[in-house]
Image 1 (cartoon, rainbow, N blue to C red):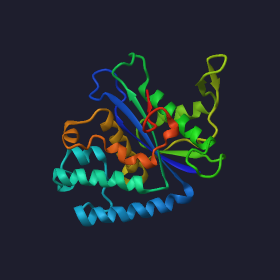
Image 2: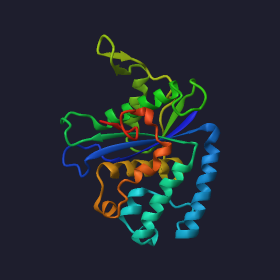
Image 3: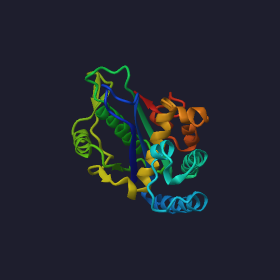
Length: 249
């Protein structure tokens, strides 16, 4: 069983939205390595406490870390923490990161950003279980979604529907119905403040968003491509034609 922690960056709005993209990142960790990841994260957080005074129990979110003087850190230290976090995730062999990004600017008014992005992400996680893309050594693995508590009702309905009807493009009729089999239970909604896994997904999603649409602060400092630090952990099979395996919609 894989635990897939998911978070987003950007918003799903198409009209008067301040963001050009909506991004989802899933950090998947096999149950047998969950404690390994948790212990490693605790050790990493001790390093951040010793070097930068960040409390062990403090919630780490990439956007406020970069945009505000969180923890009374100067800009160079905030950038350092951001980079260290991504490098830490890249060093964890238990971690697999699957990514979807919706470019919203050219979408029709009736395009459902939320539903489309989540459907694609869930399908890629389903595929990862079926084809052993995370190299667990078994093609009979399953996963469960653990998400920040945003639009939980809509997401739950989407997953339940996918278990009964899940059209995939292709086939004689233009699609093939492949109901979800490997995404178990309803999504579990977590408070990100108490979940290292969701916080990890937050950093991944933010880094991808900044690669797609960088803010001036990061671009001026050459940190807008920090997503590339995650290369060893990226699920490239999600989109083999993309350099980093990102599904671009």
